[in-house]
Amino acid sequence: MRGPGASGSLAFVARSAVARFEESPSQKERSLFSIKKAAVVAAAALAVAGSVGAAEPVKAGGVRGPGQEVRFFNEAVNGFLDSAKHGPVAITWQANGTEWQNWVLRPTSNGYLVEAKAKPDKCLQAIMKPGSEVPLVPCNVDVPTQHWQLDRAGDKYVIAEATDEDYVIAAQGNDSPVVKALRDNSPRQLWDVVSPN
Image 1 (cartoon, rainbow, N blue to C red):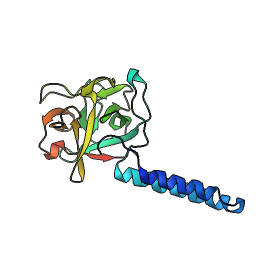
Image 2: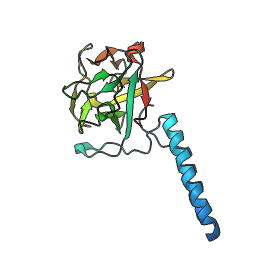
Image 3: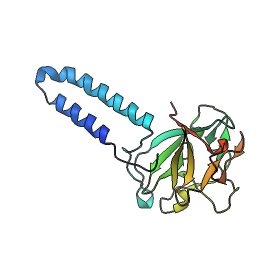
Image 4: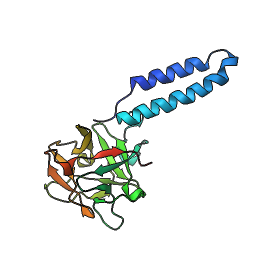
């Protein structure tokens, strides 16, 4: 799931649905159900594919476009990436179903800002030193170290720095801060990207 991209198949489904809706008036009622069904199928296909192509890129000056809400689960520590209710850094924490574990992917020109749902306008930021905790700071599209790539690794993803994909976010344990680590695709660096619902 590298950066945002337009989905040709979604455009095809939308055009087909509109064409069917423009049929004779007697068919409009039946077609409306088909349009809704096609939209649900298209949305499900995009969710399975992990696409966020419908979201708009983040614009300079803090004006954000819509983003996709996700959760990141790490099997190695059996915890979700969490925005830490009482702390300035991201942690992993056992599943609790709260917004502290929800993240909004805000598309940028080369990846995503990863914004904490429970801490609006706070984003993950890479820091210089490997092994250091990953802080939550005010979101700023003009700061390159706030841009992340989601790179597929088998059936999971690594959350890699967009400026240097050799560095990723790694879990240390539940109730522990996540850290910047040299990428080796070890279990603590592999995340399931799932819907919050």
